[in-house]
Image (cartoon, rainbow, N blue to C red; front, side, top):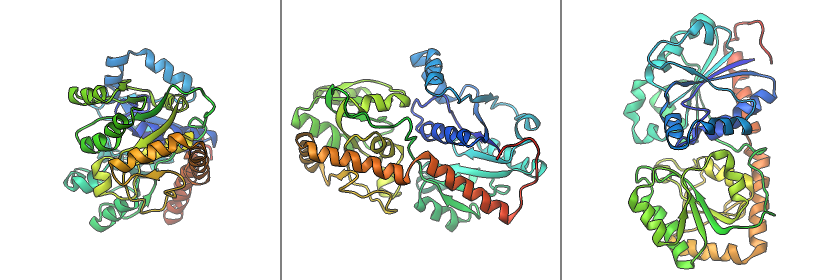
Length: 375
């Protein structure tokens, strides 16, 4: 089967968390002998910032970690070459971080080429800015993949698309794997971007204050940290490491004893049940995880076994100290978290779901027979 995907970037995860999951999905599709082409816009914001800050040599490093992944570019100022890109496609997936014009253009070509067409939504705007969804023309789409049940219900209630499937993110368990025998460089590491003040108060309460109170040796990685954020880190004795390529996260996790998850406010308040990619990756790497409050309304994990929940900043400090002093507790969290990922939340599980969705669509409306495709 030939699958064509339009995403903001496969190359760059500079402030672009969707690249994490996409890389694992493409790898898994390739393992199953599907032909996969990923297109990203030339001059895309994330890749442009990556090259500006860290140089084009980072693309060579990406290729060493992902030798089978080779994204292609299109000119966002022009219409795509539909005959070259879409003609032989069996399935096309368009991510929500694409311009509405491209979303509509690919939809208009569907009848001509006969592919199945899905929209992929991994953002909170369906809840936080529903008026933005009116910019998209879904009239030719077979359905939407959304990364949480609460988003699915919004799509159905507002009748944006008739068919909607919950398609959670997941871990590339082959790359994100435990190495807890590595010599430790510190106590706590946190990997995440500061962003647009969507969790400033939470980061102060659940990360910076407890580290300072416990005098932990800690390091933080990420981008878009304003001066006041860097000052707060320095005041707490936390080292700031800047941007970290996502493929190096397992190596960093192996050198620390514990990490935390502090979800952004829109996910806590409006999108219960959507953990984002970070907990999947941490649990897959087997590093003990402590979360600020979020509601696992879809029962993806088992709080208290896969990870701990801190009810406030003081409780976060208590639980951090508990994990750091108890090898038994740390090992239990590490083993149980990894086990849950392997049982339910790998990219292989998500590709199984995607293949089942396509089978369902083909029963509703059989796929036009094509030649020269695998699967």
